[in-house]
Amino acid sequence: MAAGSGSRGQGRGVCVKLLCVWSVCSALTAAYLLYLPLPGTISEPLKLMIVAAAFRGVSSLGDMGQSLGVVHHIRLINSAITGFESLVPLDYEEVQVEDLEFSGVQVRLYQPGTDAQPGLRRAVVFIHGGGWSLGVPKVGSYDLLCRKMAVKLNAVVVTVDYRMAPDVRFPAQFEECLQASRFFLQPEVLQRYSVDPQRVAVCGDSAGGNLAAAVAQQIGKDNSTAEKFKLQVLIYPVLQPLDFNTASYQQNQRIPILYRELMAHYWLEYLGADPDLIHSLLLNNHTARDQKLLEPHRAKIDWTKMIPKDKKKEYKPVVPSKGSPGILQQVPALLDVRAAPLLADLEVLKFAPRAYIMTGEHDVLRDDGLMYTHRLQQAGVSVTNHHYEGGFHGCVSFAFWPSYFDVGIRAVDDYIAWLQEHL
Ligand SMILES: *[C@@H]1O[C@H](CO)[C@@H](O)[C@H](O)[C@H]1NC(C)=O
Ligand SMILES: *[C@@H]1O[C@H](CO)[C@@H](O)[C@H](O)[C@H]1NC(C)=O
Image 1 (cartoon, protein in one colour):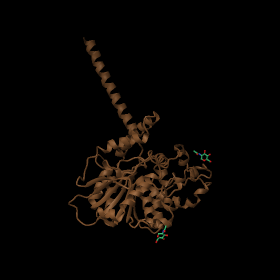
Image 2: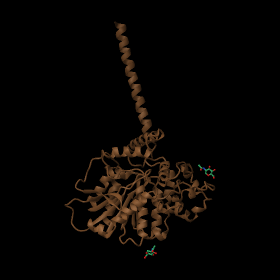
Image 3: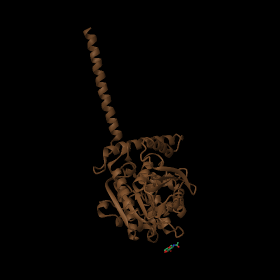
Image 4: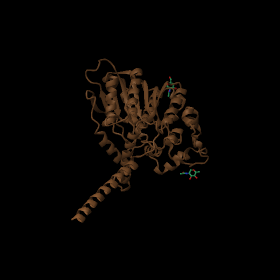
């Protein structure tokens, strides 16, 4: 008896020990999967680690799906984003929403509620980000952002639901955003929605900031468009595919959620180029010193002359003397201003609207935004650069429950306050 109860006791002891070992192992595995070394100055690092782990999980699933030949990885990631975004509870329900076509392009138009003040209103054309291939403008955080702008600014907001890669490539995304903007800027259309033609802004985040900047340049220089944008708001825009080793690319290459390689990957998807070129791009082989085609543009991407000293830190430019000849011929869009608005001449930039450019310290695209700030100012355009020391790429998409960051909420409120004052 005594022996029997002893062995039962021992058995329980072993069970408890196993349970302890299992718990410790699971906790370690979870910590290993979640852990990412992040700089202390970034906003809410623990939360960001969780978001980053979720993104890593979804993109691994996407890669798995693609290698099994079941689904393109972008489609799978987009379904996951849609699923997640549909959890975001609706707010600002007083806003009137219509899904329309502007010159054959899908848009959603938001109008402030019926109790809003009468008279002519302001308007914002919004272009969402997501590497020209991801993002669901009509669901979740982008939808809420547009509703919030409509309410806070008493403005008509048009969000462009442009088609994306891999269904379409450059210049389709750009063309659709341009067509929708041109359509909206027609006097009779503005009148239909009681919009003051002098008070229309264009705004976009990330790849949407790229499209917004390119569209603003085109409309600015086009003398056949009577109505122009008054302002452009560019939220951590991507503006050039020629230097993947700017100081901010070097500093933030492993900071979620936009890693250096991922950005190069999205460029190649957008431009419809061979994905294997990524290795050359990351080495700046396409812009090596022996690449003659780049000569007219070198000064426009020379961050050593355009970003402040405290941002350059100890980083050195990466300009190989010999590179991969042929890439710029093979992918001419790399030098096309409609894809790379940073490359526009001052003669074009000077017609661009007054700008608000938001940058984050912990973002590979920080220097794209800082260089564009510099070049627009060189062209005589007034620019407000709002820089967030704790900012990371994508933070503006995390400004609503259930996934929100203090820096995201502040960044949204700040740019809306700027529009409130200047639009
Ligand atoms: C458009 O107008 C501006 C200013 O009037 C002028 O400098 C420019 O050359 C014109 N552009 C074209 C393409 O006609
Ligand atoms: C980069 O360019 C160098 C010099 O031409 C070449 O040896 C190297 O293979 C290139 N690397 C890639 C990844 O294209």
